[in-house]
Image (tube, rainbow, N blue to C red; front, side):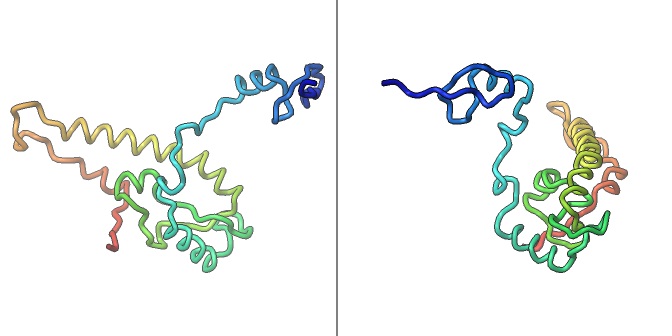
Length: 165
């Protein structure tokens, strides 16, 4: 006796399957084609800097700041307000735990802010990083005496962080 096949859970589909998901192979392939996975190569939360220190800091920060800074609803997450988390990790190797660099937000305000502001901030950061690497690279055989000075306007756009080691 073979494995009992079930009808696909997709509305209107008449196919039978034996998949754990409840969907036939055809509907699964159609869904995967129209909904690409964006985070296949995304590192784990710990590798992105969200270790036990961050979890403790975020919990304490939310205890001290229980209201969303944007809408006034109960806050559920701590947001990096002046630079994104990956920018901070790229620049300093860890998070700066200075409360002036964070704000408490509810999950809906955090999602909206992430879409609206973080993309523009990240694009500006990558552009400036690319410009700095082009400026600071010297032709082979040339010394540092011919390297132009770094632009000072860049430093004013990104705050300096003190590391507390």
